Amino acid sequence: MTLNTGIDLVYLLAAIGFILALKGLSSPRYARNGNLLAAAAAALAVGFTFARPEVRAHTLNLVLTLVAMVLGSAIAVPAARRVKMTAMPQMVAIFNGVGGGAAALISVVVFVIEAPGQPAVYRIGEVLFGVLVGCVSLSGSAIAFAKLQELMTGRPVTYPGQQVINALVGAAILVLAVSTLLTASVPLLAATAVLSLALGVIFVLPIGGADVPVLISLLNSFTGLAVAASGFTLNNNLLIIAGTLVGASGVLLTRMMSKAMGRSLGNVLFSAFGSVVTAGSGADGTGETRSVRSGTPDDIGVLLAYSRKVVIVPGYGLAVAQAQHTARELADLLMERGVEVFYAIHPVAGRMPGHMNVLLAEANVPYDELKEMDEANPEMATADVALIVGANDTVNPAAKSTPGSPIYGMPIINADEAEHVVFLKRSMRPGFAGIDNELLFDEKTTLLFGDAKDTLGKLVSAVQDA
Image (cartoon, rainbow, N blue to C red):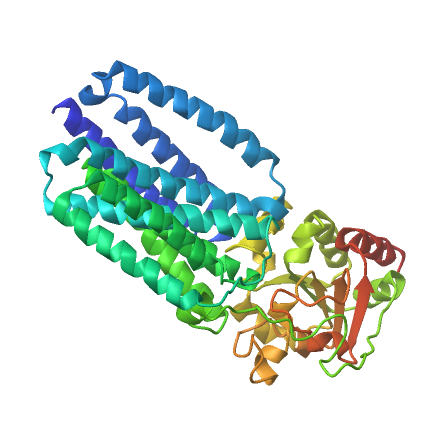
């Protein structure tokens, strides 16, 4: 058996590792092990790549590659270790964009090397696909990062003639791509890359903050497809497999999340959802102020302590307050008193796929206490208290009762079916959908205003004293 054959067998093992890791990521219980397996498979594949004779024959390139890996690790490892959970979505977005950009750059470099020899049309097609999708992923992810980091507005950005401009950019890219296929011109490929970067920007600008989880999933799929294209360009089967796995899983996740929002993917991407704020600060849209009922931590603590079943509904506000550990402390305390407690997880709660699962896993919340929306909803009617911590649009009854609402038709956590509803909120500001939550004004709803971590801490004390 030759060395290259042995390395190909290692690649096969790594590919199997990626598939098993992806299977593990489908469940919170096995997600950590899935991540470790994927990392080990990637490390194995990279290590054996350096053993290839054609790699070892280019000493300078080998040294430059190792230097790049060290520099990348020096940036990525501290950034990943120090990132707050509130900033995790934007880190995922920007890291994903860098992956797409790297795949596009690989395709460009290979094309520059091969262009003088007039490569076959299919080779140019591989390069064009990698450049187009990778550049869209890079610039689109950068805009998603800016929205999440609040470097720009999270609302959809629209402007006169937007659709016409989008169509012109798309047509120009198509013309340049065909011309590149026919001429193998490096300058035309460069122009295609520049316009593809512009396409990524104008593609993401009209997408509102409420749709960012779907957007991140879709851009992740784009990066996977770009990596697969670079695998064809480099004749590397492992890159093709890994990229295809990421691309396919990203597409499936995107469809699942769109379904969870009760909307088509086309509507998510092209409706400029969330651009209009229809109400806020307690107004009902008629200019009249509506009253809400607020309570004290002591009163709510007694209610929780003597309940039979409490459902905690987490949202982005839980991440903002870094209150996941305090939420678990409250849940553990209630369970010690014989109260049944579980967490109801909406598929698009937070700012990225699985945000709440990751957040609660950081607090070592047992996996069997996490229930997805479809599993949690049948139990909401038997709950004494629905404790909503930082969620808004994902529990808004307008999704079921108000045709014409931006979120109408979106499946929600049926918190309104619980006997009592307790809302932990900083203020009466609406969620990302830009509309008031009618549940706030329900007569069985009690609001606790303030920082979620501080309020949960007071609830812990109140339950202990009850």
